[in-house]
Length: 304
Image (cartoon, rainbow, N blue to C red; front, side, top):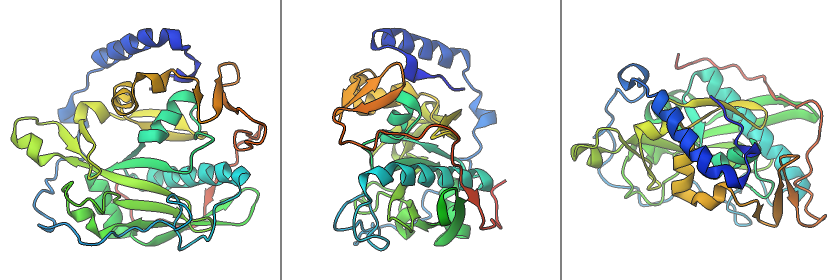
């Protein structure tokens, strides 16, 4: 289910919340039939102490770049095209693998407005289920994935890297809250991947649907599942079931209605974040056919 939230005016937000609640009430799922991804209990399978060192290291020139693949930031006008193909190639790969993933945090907020990456962003955040991170680690850790990209000679290669410390399932591992990354080896830009796990402590206290991430975000199964189908950067994507609730909790209600942010104004007619000054080039988007990537690297193992 996809709702074009970007077309709603701020004054209608109260109605939006009510409608969202009614939709949730009318489509209450039977979790005994739709929840199959967390049936295996991974508690107690990892180390008893957190790692003493941080695994992923960001570049010295910007914390959203991997310094192994870049020495400087991309020109501003090139950042959005790289990020667009970064999320498309990731979503394409996870779909081909049958791996459960969805967008979250600032990326989900960007989806709310116009299903596009914010023009001022440098990062993308996604989540995966616990069985998915185990599968990716077992079969695809440190694998390179090449895609033909229209207009890019030779295409681009992306690296899927799993943090070996993902097996430590507690928030006490403060240096390794990111469980994996999807990295553009041509630019150093990456997607942060965090695994959503059963919250063992809360479940022992009777909260049977409690979920958590190592970055200290806590959820309930009903907040995330069943995932909704939508589109992001002109590509199929999954979003959490209670997306309004999650966004309000993380960013506050105004983040879903305020049309001025980061020197940009949201144009209700064109559904684009217009820059406050002409020097901001990243808001300019090409019109016409969408340049979708095409995988050239075969995938041997799938979750299905």
